[in-house]
Image (cartoon, rainbow, N blue to C red; front, top):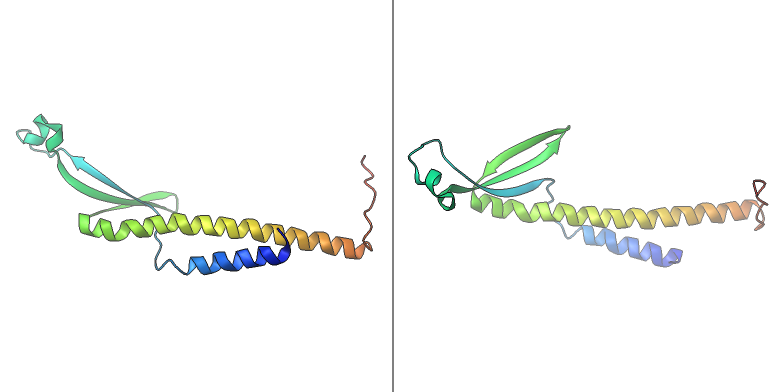
Length: 124
């Protein structure tokens, strides 16, 4: 990929980032539980457990932070969790392109300072 195409691709990816209104880091899981009442039907039939309960978790300073949400709240949050992964992938692509551009610029500068000549490798 030449420098012009690389810059164009990077600009396209940066514009793509603007599509995402909000992003959230973490995950949402749906769980069902048995209650504390031993005579409740949830203890006799696992398909009758209580729930669903929606648990949102994320890591913060090495610790897991969590909170329980209602279904309607979980439906609001879940797309923003997906957005985080999409944005992370775009940033990864931007980083790869940036790396190529930077290394190409370094190589070009080296060639300019050497007058376009390659120095022999003394370690061959």
